[in-house]
Image 1 (cartoon, rainbow, N blue to C red):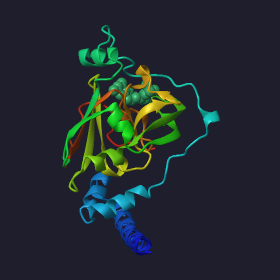
Image 2 (spheres, protein in one colour):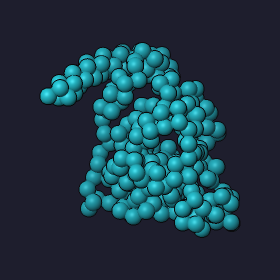
Image 3 (cartoon, rainbow, N blue to C red):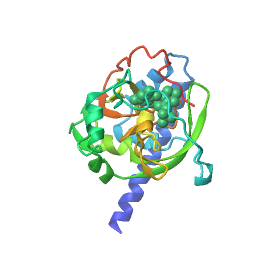
Length: 248
Ligand SMILES: Nc1nc2c(c(=O)[nH]1)N[C@H]1C(S)=C(S)[C@@H](COP(=O)(O)O)O[C@H]1N2
Ligand SMILES: [Mo]
């Protein structure tokens, strides 16, 4: 009984804070200040971390499909960093791949209380989510696939992300990198995926672990992950030639 009351009070509190947060966010989005994503994040300064999380988890979900909608899925960009003939060859990747990724680790660093290396088994012990979504590439094609993995929010909370954190940067074996803000990082469909269409993630799609950001164009979904770095400030991901923010 006591527990139930507690949950009710807490839920009421979160709902209240979320309403306030939505209002502040609405005002910020309406204001002409540029860049917009900067303003949204500045508005975050006014929230407690709990309130921000409650707000973010309420965001609209990208459309989810059923098994019958799954399509063939092209592999683009780097399709094998373990290939010696590839311009993006990685000796470390070739080695860990030869070991079936048994010695692969994801390094989680930066503005977290407990920086550490996560093995695939460590990640698979965290809460799991499966979703069937459409991937849209900036080059004009799209495809539907099923992804299984740990919500990024779960990993960030497990690592003890600091309330001042603003961005999450992703580094891949092929030298590819990109970053997302906390709104995308805590979106319930943002996954670190180790499974695709019911099987372990294949090499051409980013084995053993890739990002899925269902609220953004395909190039944000970094394949072949090796490092995740949480920062307070925006780190320029380099001259990919693509806009940093391209929400769908
Ligand atoms: N490490 C890495 N991640 C990457 C890329 C890449 O070349 N290297 N290409 C990006 C682009 S442009 C797209 S559309 C998707 C393609 O994912 P897929 O090969 O599974 O279709 O991965 C994204 N993530
Ligand atoms: Mo793409």
